[in-house]
Length: 187
Image 1 (cartoon, rainbow, N blue to C red):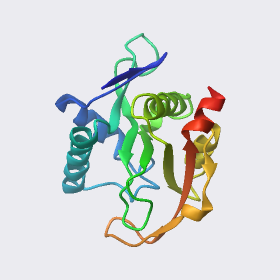
Image 2: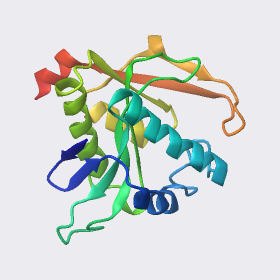
Image 3: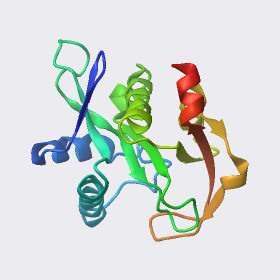
Image 4: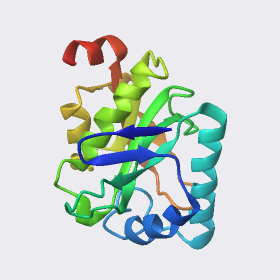
């Protein structure tokens, strides 16, 4: 899988992507709302999930690479963005879920929105998703702010509680969603 935008390439993972991805995204700032910095075993589990989702569904949270155009972070892996099937135990199950995680020095430049727009276009155009959901905690205003800028609407009826798992304390998860019809109206 490969998606291209004006400044980014979203693509399947390569072995050489994983070390820089984890170096730059497994930090206290990036992981603040995601259960904190991960240990080596948890990192390996995440990498395994990224690959298994691609194998099972044909989509995953793809590697996001900055185009090699001489711009800020040219040619570097700056994070991930993509689709998986929602699978948190107490949340919606099986829905197309969009997610993103970018390294801190890529924040505030519109990269997350650019990658998320390409991902939503693929969700509705390539994978024929009827709707796409996104999850965060209410305190993570940058994340739900992006959801709103993407045209997603808050779905309080789908909010859920994520019980403690070892990495996470109990968290109240808020849900946003967009339908294929609403996406097409904005295009």
